[in-house]
Image 1 (cartoon, rainbow, N blue to C red):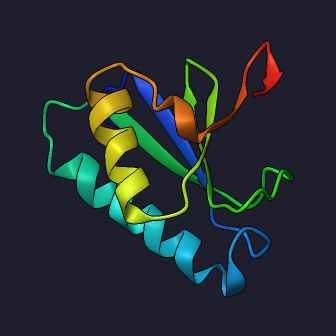
Image 2 (spheres, one colour):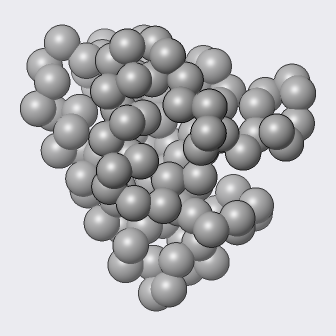
Image 3 (cartoon, rainbow, N blue to C red):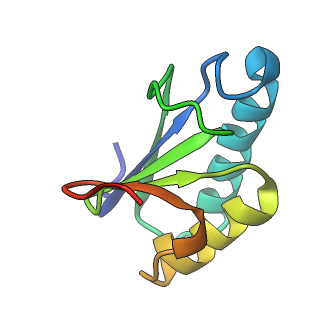
Length: 103
């Protein structure tokens, strides 16, 4: 396992998007975006379901405990660039925060 400082989980279950196709595509694109930035120390893991199905896929960043509604590649790119690389949360796409609840 490569060294990482953040862990990103993304739902690829069947409830967030029709037939899981969009969710799986987003998971693959996340991997491409991480791999294209060799200085980015992020591990990604697919999850079956977070049971919050709010127009997913749902993407969670730890250790911050920030849950995002990641509906398209534009949002995914912002999360990678701004949060994972720049350490600035993309507040308008956050749906839940560890220790706070839904926002």
